[in-house]
Image (cartoon, rainbow, N blue to C red):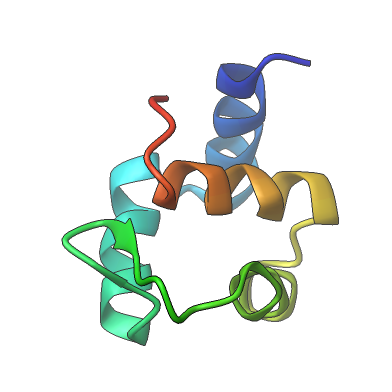
Amino acid sequence: MTFQAYIDNIQAKTGKSAADFKKLADQKGFSSKGKLKPEVKAGQVVAWLKEEFELGHGHAMAIVALLKGKEA
């Protein structure tokens, strides 16, 4: 599965776009201006996404990659 396919599937499941997840991560304090803060561990973000959005590990890691700067 391509990175874009992960992002598309996440949007289909949650109704939230990549930009929405960047804003939500900023609000949660995991990122600033859509970029993951250096002190934030991937596991913290994954736990939040699994809990709040019921994403699987692979899909949650796609959001982590997005926050690290990977282009969707």
